[in-house]
Each structure stands twice: as C-alpha cells, then as structure tokens.
Image 1 (tube, rainbow, N blue to C red):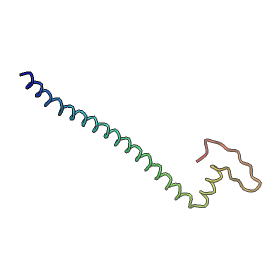
Image 2 (image 1 turned 120 degrees about the vertical axis):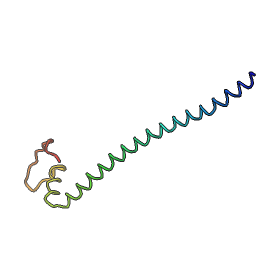
Image 3 (image 1 turned 90 degrees about the vertical axis):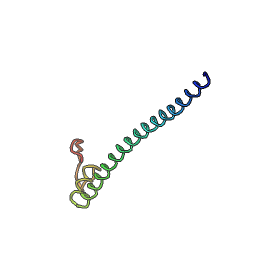
Image 4 (image 1 turned 180 degrees about the vertical axis):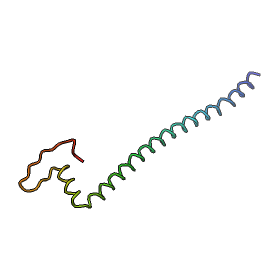
Length: 88
C-alpha cells in the first residue's frame, strides 16, 4: 500500500512540476516580448524623427538655421550668443 501511494504521488508531482516550470518560462518570455516591443516602439519613433529631420535639412534655409543654432556656426563678422531654450 505504501509503495502504491508513493508511485501515485510521484505520478502527480512530476507533471505538476513540469507544468509550473513551463508556466514560469512563458511568463518570462512574455516579459521579454513586452520589453522588446517597448524598444521597438522607441526605435521606430527615433527613426521617424530622424527621417523628418533629414527631409527638413534638404531645405537650405532650414539647414542654415539648424547649423547656426545647434553648432554655433556664424557668418563673417557675426557674434553668437547661445540661448539654450531656443535650440532645435
């Protein structure tokens, strides 16, 4: 009787252990998927912003204003006084 009970308990414990382990793996993978989705969203936003900036930089007047504001380029005889709140 004792051996039969021991075998029956083992028959229920092993599948339960495997089920719990599989469940934990699935939850870990779901966390990774969410993390990758957030990274993807952030990178796609950055890509969109950079494409928009590249499109704007094709305009000569915008490119000149951007270079003057961001990199402090100046014309001959011109003084630059940077104002951080006005930077693009």
